Each structure stands twice: as structure tokens, then as C-alpha cells.
Length: 357
Image 1 (cartoon, rainbow, N blue to C red):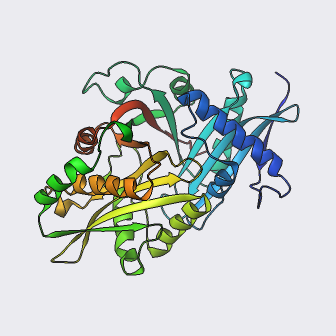
Image 2: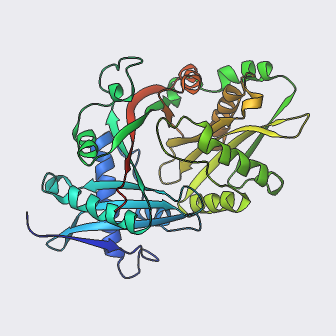
Image 3: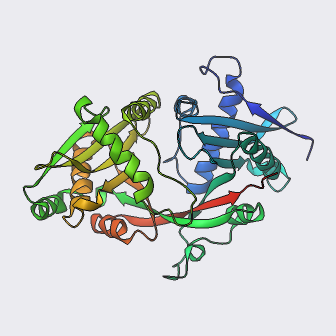
């Protein structure tokens, strides 16, 4: 392959601004990789949505590194660095076009990303690999039993990353069942009159935003982390509004179901669904959390079933829902299986300690 140039790619202010052509090339590359992997366009991100998603915010710095050969962009590394918590870490994602693979492009991109992370005083790099479902893993054999020895895993391992956690990727086909409705009443009866369901679409009501921020913060440590070296995130009302603004800019609709403990007024849990308006048939499950002091009342099932019912009413075009859960999180996996979710793949969560110098 010809000479490889690695450069920092500035995120343009708009798709018509100078530099937008390079960003469009990156967006096309990322979409092509998703289509190649999944065999469909369920994970397609319109360039405008990708542009909104790649802008830095007060809580996260987002950077792009591009690999260029003969003037054409053939690879990209996406860097995300927290700015309010976990300041020791950064996340990297490397994507290379098929024609440029196995030619050193990915390795060069990663080396530049690692240098950028170290320059920002980050000592830990996190990465994720995706793997389609292939055969049955051996229960209890550890995270590696779920991840095939494919090109993505081999690349991560060769760079010095360790596999620390495996997420099961599951999909619910809404046309095949009445997901939510069949179990909602049962879960509501089990929860009893001591809990009240709340819903909002888009923005959290002002009088709930601080309590909701505490749920989002708790989610960062209550979900299984395996061996990941991560601390609790810092959430407040401003960060909730930041996340909501990003979703609006990405042309996404966010549906939240929360449950309130009537006696204390405390928000006991929440669950989130996200739908991008360019493809309302595809829905993504985000956080689901029930506080430890309120567990044992079927609130997890109540929340998820209720939000699926709300989804059918608010987005009748919705056809399938994707969700990610740690393979060790048997409680949440059981809820999903009862609702009709079925495994379609796995995501490997990797981390690497950077040398001190």
C-alpha cells in the first residue's frame, strides 16, 4: 500500500462547512462497516446525526483521527474522553475500509490514538468489539468463551487489550408478539399500590430531573463491569439536559419510564428507549435500573413492559428493539427473555493499561 498519513480530523460546524467532505467520507465509512457486519441498515447513522454525535460537550471530549492514502480516507479512529469523571480513561474505536485492511492502517491509527490518550494524561484505554452469534458458549467458562477468535478479537489482543466483560446483544421482533402488554398487568400486580409509573418523552420534567440524574449516576456502577477499571460517573441535572440535547440534535426520540415509591416519593428505577427518526422501525434499549432497596418487587419487568407498551403507542412504526446486557447479568437477561428478546450477537469490552512512560 502507498504511504499512510494519519491526521486529526476536525469536526465541522455543519455539513456545508469547510472540511465537511472529509467528515462525510468518515460517516460513509462507518455506515459501510455497520452494514457489512450486520447485513442490514439497522445501525445506519445519517451524516447529520453522526455530526451531532461527534461534537464535544462539557462532559466528554470527542476526537477523530483519519488515515489517508493517496488523498482518500481509508480508516478512522474515534476517541472519547470523559471530562467530569474517570479522567484516567478514554475509549477508542478503529475502523478500516475493506480494501485497506491487513496493510498496517489499523495499527497506525491505534498507535496515534494511544499517543493522543497518553498526551491527555489517560492511563487506561477501553475498546469494544462486535461479534455475530455463532454456536453456543460454555456456561461458566468465562468471558472469552462467548467471543470467537475472529479478526476483531485478534486485533484487540495483539494490541495488548484484555477482554474484561461480554455483553449479549439481543433483539426483540415486535411483530412476532405483544411484548409488554402480556406481562404488564402481572408485573403491576406484583409491585402493588406502593409504586407509581411515570412516563416522559424527550425531556425529563423539571421537578424530577435531579432525582433522575441520581438514577443515571447509579447506573454507571450498578450494571456489571467485570474487570473494567471504572469509577462512578458524575451526573446532575445539567448532564441530563446535555444528554437530552444531544439526542434532539441527532434527531432521536427518547422514551423514559420511571417508577416512584409512593410513600417516600423516591424514584426507584427507570428504563430508556431511543428511536432515530430516519428509521423508526429500529429501537435501541438504553439504561434499565432499579435501586437496590426496591428490588424484589418485579419493578424491572414493570418498567420494561410498560415502556414497550408506551413505544407501541408513541412510535407505531417500531418493528424491532436491540439491547445489550452483560452476560453475567442473569436477572436482566431473564426479564428480556420473558419479553421475547433473542440473542443475535455479543460485544466484547476490552481494556489496556498504558505504560507510564
